[in-house]
Length: 385
View 1 (tube, one colour):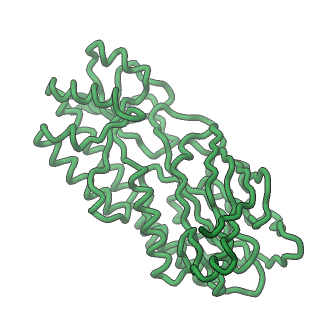
View 2 (cartoon, helix red, strand yellow):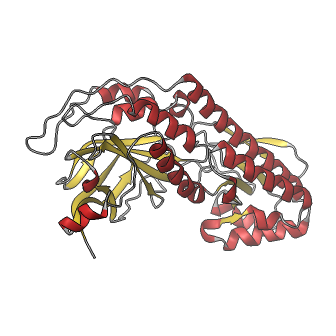
View 3 (cartoon, helix red, strand yellow):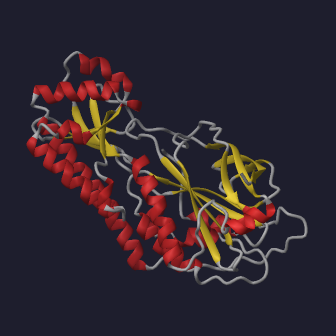
């Protein structure tokens, strides 16, 4: 995913007029939010560097293991038949002693670097970088192995041959030689990451109970609850480098809960994988029975592999807990964005788009504040069974 992102966007966002979408709703002035603690920013940078280094180590080990013709054949067959062309590395590595140990150790280290538990199991995958390379691979061309690097602005990509030698590949042109990419199963890490966010937000005093109604009594009394449903969504596309795979996206929906405390709901959007594509998820984004005011904010983020969910939860909670209910809607987008470590705004920032003042009666197309995406929404009544 190549999306134009800069920390300058935060300044532009702060200057936007924050107009209420619901009639009669008072809007308070935005509360300046402090930047993320330096320790958290350093931790996030370290985590991203660790993930990249681990993947690079695995790529080199896999490349040198491809002197084994049987492994080459298994890899070629597995990537040709796997869904979306991405095959789990663990089963492929099982017969190669050195590769198996490296892959298993890498899975554990990556989980730790992303703030996830070791119980996730295998995380690494391998795929052919571009379908056009299949013919040369089938004809017997020797493949290179690289990593699906997170840096969208990289000019060269490092790849390894079977002798372990490094080659610099042009990031702007598809190589003529077949290239395998080693990356992370971000669908698996996203699901685990959302669980970490909800757990950590709750543990740190933010009301975060997910999309289900906060209490069954309230929902039962009303016979259900009102939600906002996404009928379609699109993120803009500037450029899709050959070395990038599909992204995994999620939203942080923020507002004030019924108890007057700031709440953050993490909503997984795994279908939103590519720029320039319109998706029709019919997904519930907000459960309004959980909110005190008729307005909430949405920040759309992506996990390209380096997101540390524990650090994200700590950073966001540290900022939002300083904001108190003032008896009116307070825009929280700026506070969430200010909580992101500075490293997330360079090379591979995770911030994609944001929407202010989403209301229960919001209907139709809503353009993002950055002009980098849009979604169409409609009110949706979720009835009691």
